[in-house]
Structures are given as C-alpha cells and as structure tokens.
Amino acid sequence: MMDLGNQKRALITGGTGGLGLTTAHFLIKQGWHIFVSDCNQEALDKLSQEDNITPLFMDVSQRTSVENAFTELSNKIKHLDAIVNFAGILRVGSVAEMPEQELSLLMEINVMGTFRVNQVFLPLLNTEHKGRIINISSETGWQSGGPFNGAYAMSKHAIEAYSDSLRRELMFLDIPVIKIQPGPFKTNMVASIETNFSKAAEASTHFNKQLTRVKSLAMHENDKANDPIILAQTVHQALSVTRPNAAYSVKPDKMRASMDYFPVRWVDALLRKVLNQ
Image 1: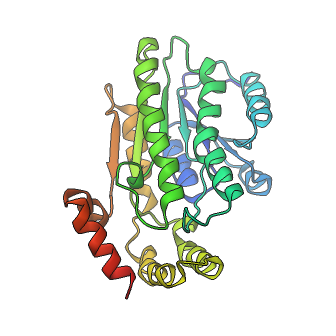
Image 2: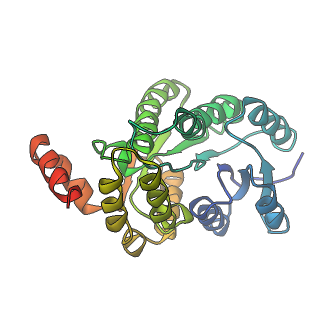
Image 3: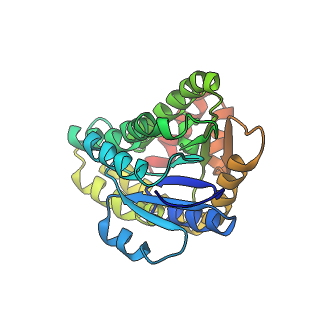
C-alpha cells in the first residue's frame, strides 16, 4: 500500500491529454496526489518520474482493462477522493453518412467508458471519505444538436442524462456527481477540427459543400479557445466546495449558446443560409 497519509487523491481518466494533464498538474499544486490513467503507454511513461503522479494504464473502451486498472489501484490505496472522467474522442461529419464503427467507437469511449470507470471504481469512493465523481460533458451536451457535429453531441447529451440519473442515485450514498460543461479550450482535439472536417468533406456523398463551409468557419475555433487552466480551476472548485453545483458551465461559445434562445425555425433557416454559401 502507498502511504499518502491525509493527502487527497484522484483518478483522472484521459489524463495525458491537454485538459486532463493540465488539471492533474493544477490539483497537484493544491496538494493532491493524482493517478493519471490513459491508454497511451508512451505518454504515461513520461510522467512516471513526476512527483505526486502515479501513471495507470487503462483503456476505458475495454471492460477488462478497466477492471485490471481497478485491481492495480486498489492494491495501492484504500480509497479515492475523486474520479474525474476526461477520457473522450471527437468525430465530425454527417450522422446520415458516418460509418457505424466510428459512431460506435465514439460512444464506447465517451459514454460507455465513463459508465465503466464510475461503476468499477465506485467501491473506492463508497467509504467514510465520501469521494466525488466529475463527468466532463460539453457545451454541446446542453445545446441543441448542430449539423455535422451530431455524433459528438449525441455522446455528450448521453453524458448529461447519465450524470443526472447517477447524481440522484448516489446522493443516497452521499457521493456527489458533478457535470462540467466546457466550451472551446486549447487542446489537440480543438486544433484537429479543421483536419477532421477536411476528411469528412472528402468522404461525403451529399454534404461536401456544407462540410467545406463548416471547415472554413471552424478554422478560427482554436483562435478563440480558452486556456485549459480555467477548466482545471473549475474542477478544483467542484472538488473543494462543501456543496458543489450539479453542473458547471465553463466558457461556452456565446454564438452557439445564443442559438438555443431563438425559435427553431429561425435557427434552421440561418444554418441553411450560412452553410449553403
């Protein structure tokens, strides 16, 4: 067993990515010990010498891998103070044309991966320490679905519903479940949007024109993306306050957010006009 004394400890999935790793480093500065999990062994190896980080291999898309990670971690510590689910991928393109295996992989990682981790690691939270669960949703989780981002939006809408139900179940165990809904942040995922839309446009039978237009609009996404430290600070707040909010919306895109306040017909007409140019 590791001797961490009274030091708080958290499991962060997808922890070698931009948002997950930034959050890990921020929490460490606040005195936490972080178990950084990912399926990128090379990235995990680079973290092995850092103070207050313990790398943990875990592929959230595979139940056996999650269970093996639980066994490894439960042999090191008796409890967790937090599980923070960052593991996720992005897919863009038409939901009318997207290959089924791509959508399946997206849901396996973004939705089922979060489900697996929380279910398997729950025994490490259900102690006198009463740890917390944070599920990383997205602004797309509460916004109405937009064109060519439907697959990702589907996964985050599912995370919203799952998190609400889980919160209302685990409240009987005094384990808070918190949704965090980020807008655009500077990550490799955001930086890859232009490339992803180019590939989707090339593969599309019906929507090449519209996807190419979306790509031109998305090229500026990274320019207006926010500093990941802002999200890390929100995670820390959600883990530190006595009574956390059920959800934290963090820097949503103002234009996308505003569209939900207008009649659906107006928004559809606007999208038709803009994307047909």
